[in-house]
Length: 278
Image 1 (cartoon, rainbow, N blue to C red):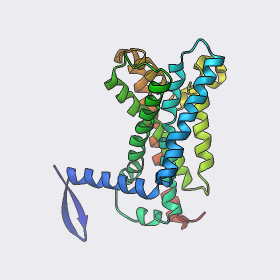
Image 2 (image 1 turned 30 degrees about the vertical axis):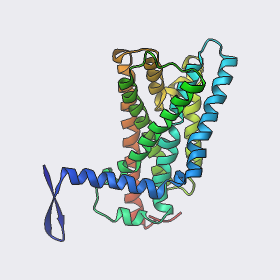
Image 3 (image 1 turned 180 degrees about the horizontal axis):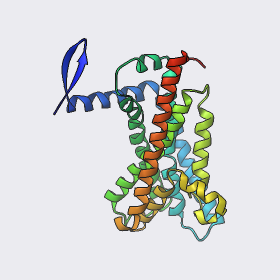
Image 4 (image 1 turned 120 degrees about the horizontal axis):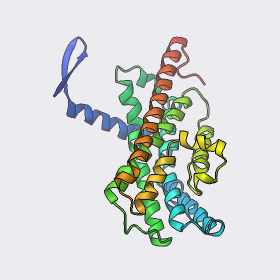
């Protein structure tokens, strides 16, 4: 299958394979150029060492205060939640850094598809988030006794990707807002903390006040964590199908909101000449 592009009044045929290659190349370059944590020392401390301490802290704390919950409950919750370091901090940092690094005006001056540009900024961070969860699960298996004996691994991997995608939608919203703000870390920190508190990471949602449970179900990650716990406990697709479908819908909703905000800021800033103003 071929598509036609117009360049200098000439038709150029571009195959679907070439378009996919352009998309993947853009995702790779933006990840390498704009992800500040890619320095090995920073990456190891931020994405591996610190999350392991988070898992240890909440697992041992949970063993003390909630004896009715097994260690697996806390290990799974925190291992999945640390993927937000990639899907929220990483994506928000990558999108917002287009302006701080001075590449935004060149990027938006191209005729490239805005949807392709927008989504490509999150692709590598979704894969990075999956890597973070894999490390967390491995750590929990070796040191904290998490049991995968009854786990359907294909279903687990599918649910993990859907959950990370859903959380990345929130990262896209924050990153788009970062194009209009001087500092993005405040919003990223707030979002990461909200997920930790409201998404049932370290305690069942039933223990939250009723008025706050609405917040829990309006956030990504909540249903994904529930589904992953069910799968690791031996659940099958019929047990979690509604959860992952709702999680996927939440992800698309946040992704759509983020893209609309991104386009609004692009149009507004071009109209008012404020594209690179702080």
